[in-house]
Structure formats: C-alpha cells, structure tokens
Image (cartoon, rainbow, N blue to C red):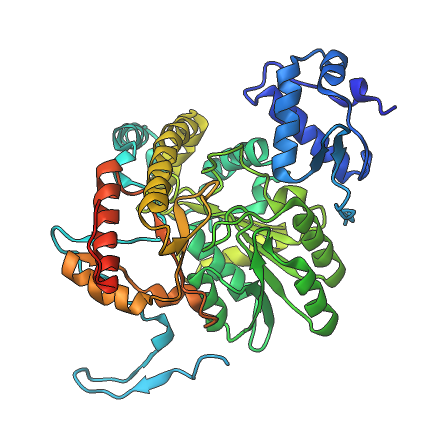
Length: 497
C-alpha cells in the first residue's frame, strides 16, 4: 500500500486550490516513478479520509489528472495511472536575397521578399478576420496608468532612467520568477530569465543562437508562420512532422533523430498554433526524453497559457525539464494587450547570458518604466484578477461563436470546439476554396486576409484559424452573418440568419 498519508502535504493557506495541489503532487510522484503505470489509485472516499479533505476535492483532482492524460478511468474497476506513459529519464529553402538596384534612392540595398506580408488597410464599416487576439477594450488601462504614474513619481525614479541591464529590469525578473514558479511549476532563478519585447523577440534570439545554415529544426506540418520565417532566415532546414489531436507526433521525431542530427524542436504545447490542439502528457514526456537522448533544444512557445475554459492550465514542458533542454518563451501581450511589449525567455544561464549579449545589438534594453509597471501589476495580483475577468468574457464569446458555426455552417466547415485560446481552427469543405470566398467577401465588406499562410507546407488542408476573442457578442453575430452571406454568394443560394 502506497503511503498516501505521508506523501501529500497540503497547504490550506495557499491561494492554490487543494485539488490542484493534490493533482500536482500526483504528477510529481508519477514522474518520479513512485507511482508507476497501471497503479490503481484509491477510491475517492478512501483517499479523502486518508488526507482529511472533502471527497469532492479528490474527485476534482482525479478529473484534472484524467483531462491531462496522467490517469485513465476504467468503468467498474477504478482509476489507474496511464499505462502508456513512458519513463521520464532525468537528466526547398528561400532564394538568396536580391540586391535592389538604386532607382529613386541614391544607393542599393538588400530586400528579403520572404518577410513581406500584406497588411489590411482598415476601412470604416469593414470587418477583418484575425487569428486570435485579445480585445483591447478590456485592457485595464486606468489601473495600469495609475501604477505608471505612481512609479514615475517616485523620488529615486531617475535611477531607472539611464542604461540598465541587458537582461531587463531586475525587479520584474525577480517577480516573474516567483510568479512562474508558483503558477507554472517552474524551478528557476532570475539568472534564467531575460525580458524580451514579446514572444517574437524570444523566438528570434533562440533561432539566432541555435541555428546556422543547413541545421535542422523540427516543426509541425501546420505551424506558427512567424516561427517558420525566423528559422528560414537562419537558412535552417525545416523538417515537418504530423500534428494530430494529441499535438506533434513525437514518434515521427524519434525516427528523424535516428537518421539526422537536429538542433531544435519548436512546439506550442499548450494550444498548438494554428490548430489549437494540446500536446498530450505521454508525448510531453517522450519529447523530453528524446531531447535528453539526442541533445537538442525544445523551443516551447507558450503564447496563451492563461486561457483555458474546460480545466486549469496544463503545466508547460519547462516545468518537467530536469536536463536543461527547454527554452521557454512567453509574454503578457496576449493576456493584457498587444501594445504592451513585455515578454520573457527562460533557459539555462549560459544560454540566457549569450541571448543578452545578442540583445545588446537589436534592443540595448527594455522599457524600464513599463517593466516596473508590470512588475507591480503582477505582484499586486492585478494580473490574475484581469485574467479571471477576461476568461469569463472570452468563454462566452467562444461558446456563441461555436454555436453559430454549428447552426449555420455545418455543411461548410468542420471544427473542434477549442478547450482554450482565442481562436477556432476551421476546415472548409473541399467543394469550396478560400480564394473564391476571399474574393466574394469584398462585396460584404469582410476581409479574409492571407489564408495561404496557414498552409506553408502546401498540403492543401483547406483550413484557417479565426479568432473570436476580440469581438463582442453583437460583432460575432455580424461577422458570421457576413461570412455566411459570402459563402452563400459562392454557393449561389438564398440565406437565412
């Protein structure tokens, strides 16, 4: 009999719910192989009596472990540790840039056409599809402004207004360490953190340090376009693997590792970009084991960790990394508003030190006053309160968005209701094309955008990612009404909405 009573120490004064403390401890015991696959867990009544907690706490814990894939429930038999969990062992490229001859200017320069992306010309009364951004109208601007003014009025603020650390503001780094260790299960110090101008800068720095010409990086068959572009600028070889309902297929990565040397795997583990699927617990451990065995880096882009509607956020790969393979990248841009360019890169200290050296030449330092503002915003609990507020709003919008899609577009789109994030991955019936829909949408003042960028591998999946979070309920109805009008224009059918 496993000593459950002495193996679980619950802090009843902690802000973290007891069922999450219990869940996280179970995960630790499973990773440490103290609870091995196929072990039967005690019944909820038995465990609640052993630990002196309410039975509902144990039930919620087991449901959380089931959602994350750590356990499996067998009818009439009980709850068991997932039998399929592996052991976590501790420890055609772009053409060359063309030189542009001097015409209207007095010198020549190099232009990289791969970086060109069409930006919509925003027009009054038009509506524009996006791939999942926050609603700027929900930004707590008054709270942030008040904090900013208070910081600027400090007597010794002048000390923050000269050249500062290449790593970003030290107070923010310390606060982030405390916050991320507590909320995401990390085990880091400020030496592992460099502040960036959003996650995009983190991907840029990681690419620059990891990749040279002809190096191999593994990405999803569908993948975040800007990450692809970063890797291609390093002239790396992009090796694509399948993405299914459980995320990147790590068995394919293992087969690649047996044949080639790879330098990195890029993964959006929480909600894969663009398809929104979550990397399963089994594959997370498998990927970490592969990284240890074959000595490659995992670039974990956790761009929307905070937005989960069905269960609490799943801990990132970085929380399970004991061998120093994971480079963890995140930001507050998605959570609060894109205008606040505050992000972070977390990695082993030697990597962070070199990233700081590289950062010197593209951004000498961050915005110290803004970083101090967000240090206060996080430390005071305002960030958590904001997340709870917008989560309710975005969940309502997700539900409405998906409800209308089901009711009005069932013969046109297939999709899975996303468990989190701010967008839906829609697959268009192959009788139709996004090219024709994009052209027809102009009549209804609807901008579809560059839908082609979701299929960089050119496999013809006919899918795009559409955000719902930035529209209120009336705007969602209007947006989807225009989309329905557009599609029926293509179908040449009468509509009812």
